[in-house]
Image 1 (spheres, one colour):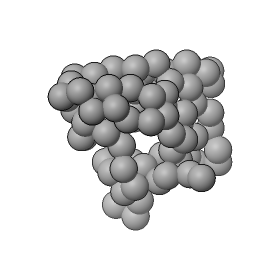
Image 2 (tube, one colour):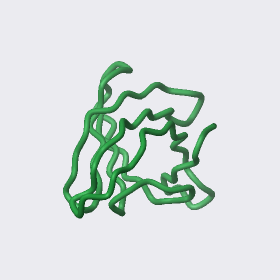
Image 3 (cartoon, rainbow, N blue to C red):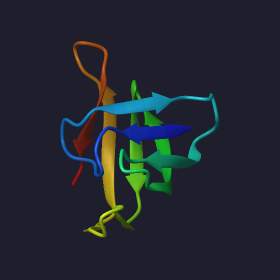
Length: 85
């Protein structure tokens, strides 16, 4: 399973490409547009995914805290990120 974000970090409403390889829940690759890839974890929740992305450093050196995201399709069928508390 791979989640590819269209920016160097995830944010609410951000576009996500989901490559679902049919794997069981667990470890996944989380890729950002600046080329940084980290290992996260995921699980299914109805028609969405819950993604736990660990803390990482962007290619420019910015520290980004680990976060939990809900990744779901919008009305247009695009995958978008929704921040969870």
